[in-house]
Amino acid sequence: MRGLAAAPFSAAFSTVTIPAGTTPLAVAVAQNGNVYVGNANSANVTVINSTTNTVLATVPAGSDPAMIAVAPNGNVYVTNQSSNNVTVISSATNTVLATVPTGGARSRWRWRRTATSTSPTASPTT
Image (cartoon, rainbow, N blue to C red; front, side, top):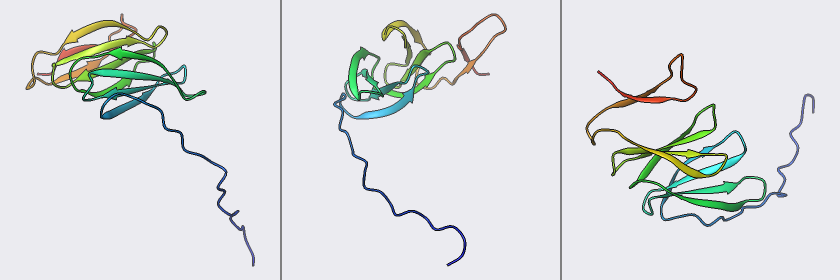
């Protein structure tokens, strides 16, 4: 046989189950390696240490946390679908910094940067 041969598939890996809230839906990884899991039916975010696979914190969020993004400054932004707001979490302390209203279920919002801001800002689209 000529060319490269693929090595046999290794079974030297394992699966780890980490407890989170009810209906874990959204996932994001912060620059510090912590994993943020939005739990849609328990209105919170589970913070997991990706090195030890242990739960570091459970942070309250709004109703039905659906999407998570991490900004370059380390802040974690969680969109809360049913409560029409965004929870801002510090990845350094795993605490809520702010809750930003988004104006209702039918409004459309976008994240944008400004020249004077180091974090994204919510603004309505036109």
